[in-house]
Image 1 (cartoon, protein in one colour):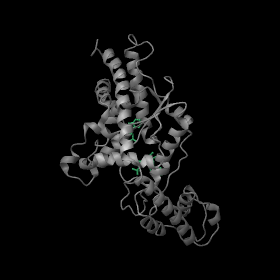
Image 2 (cartoon, rainbow, N blue to C red):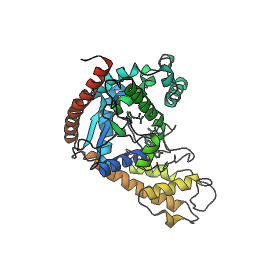
Image 3 (cartoon, protein in one colour):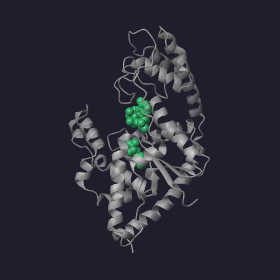
Image 4 (spheres, helix red, strand yellow):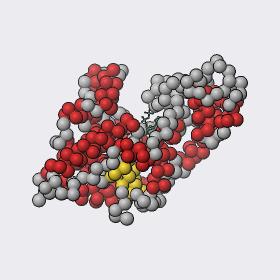
Amino acid sequence: MINKPVILTGIRANNDLHIGNYFGALMPIVDMAKRRVSKYKINLFIPDLHSFTTPIDHAALQAQVMHNLKLFVAAGLPIDNPEIRIYRQSYVPAHSELTWILDCFTGFGEMSRMTQFKDKSSKLMSADIDKETQNRISVGLFNYPVLMAADILLYNAKYVPVGDDQSQHIEFTRDIAERLNLKFSYMYPKGLFVLPVEVKEQHKFFGKDQGLRIKDLQNPNKKMSKSNETGRGIIFLGDKPEDARMKIMSAATDSIGTVRFDYTSQPGISNLLDIFSLFGGDKDQFIGHNQYGPLKTATAQVVGKFLADFQARLKSVNEDELLEKLYRDEEYMRTISDKKLLKVQQAVGLRP
Ligand code: ADP
Ligand code: TRP
């Protein structure tokens, strides 16, 4: 049991997840944890220290973290399995401490090349926020990949399922681990850190991302994303079934007049067919129809039923049980991460 390889992933504490996140992130993580737990150690954590690399409402953070965890439980994540560890990053101080040490071995140029930093900082620059905030693109945003590397290296994680936007951060994690392994090989000839496997190997291991992307209902050429302007094309997990129905009934379609599954010429209809089948419908029954209404009605029905069931499960998540689980796992994580941190502190000369 001690030597089971570690699968680790961070689940961002975003409120208002939508059905795209549900099928693209929640379900795959929950399934993975349940399927792999007998052969792997599973570490799932909320990277709450990452939450304010860009400005947020701090008064809402606590509630958001708990809400997000409950979404996972409602989606089927078992909290009665001690082999699936669930914890909050900020409750395990070694994450921050290792970050500082890794910071001092990380190049400024290396971080400047991270595309997510470039994207997020330029978005902030052009955002409708006051000049003072714009001028303070934080150092936290800049070095957040280092914190992510610490999240991974503290637990010797080999497999880290993440979206493609995070691949560069995984590569950086491998780089910094290798750099320190080499530098301190005289103390730790077998390596101070375990390298996570290459991104390509990760894809093989997890099954290459099926490329599933639910599209925005109003603009089916864009993926459904919480940063889309109006929210009218997005179905949030917290939407009332009736509101979701209205969004689906007013989804953008086309003037072709026949239901076909073809994302190039009929992206809106194809998206509805996809949504219908993701929620358990049989999309073939609509192919060839020359009316769009019945497909919309049927989609609204399966989505509405899902939302009602999901929200009922969410309500019944036992918060006390969840908190107990968190405290237990966080205590355990503090113990094992402190051991790893001590090794690193010894390597860099901070401890005898
Ligand atoms: P958003 O675009 O809403 O901000 P994120 O970028 O935070 O979502 O993505 C969180 C997770 O949800 C990622 O794993 C991503 O792959 C998945 N995801 C996001 N949008 C979709 C979508 N429209 N369809 C499928 N999966 C998605
Ligand atoms: N950066 C990841 C994201 O934005 C979240 C994350 C933080 C993470 N630390 C991690 C993912 C460690 C995997 C491993 O989605």
